[in-house]
Image (tube, rainbow, N blue to C red):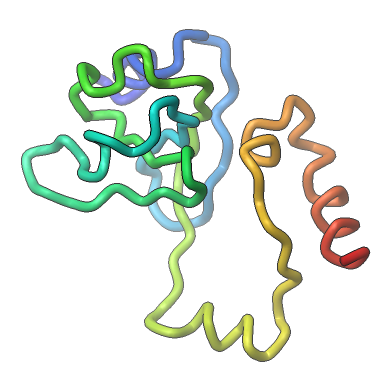
Length: 130
């Protein structure tokens, strides 16, 4: 089954935009806000066992090839991202320690904002006002 068709199992709107996640690879992934906490969702439900990343307490990464039964009634909202960005071991930590990054606490509203084009200036303003 085509990856775009698999996405529709988690994101019901076929006209929903896909967001760019980074320059490495073209694999699609979904960030989903989940109701009911992490119970039963700690691991990807794929042929191999892999711990699911949760960038925020109720926001987890969903692989488009996962079985949908564990998500039944639990996806509050979701966005499709294509591509990813990776760092080498300790690279990001070193960049943060040098002050190369502005830091601000993310929220689900940031991830699922209805105005993604306004997100960057909003985050910069929050980080510099803090």
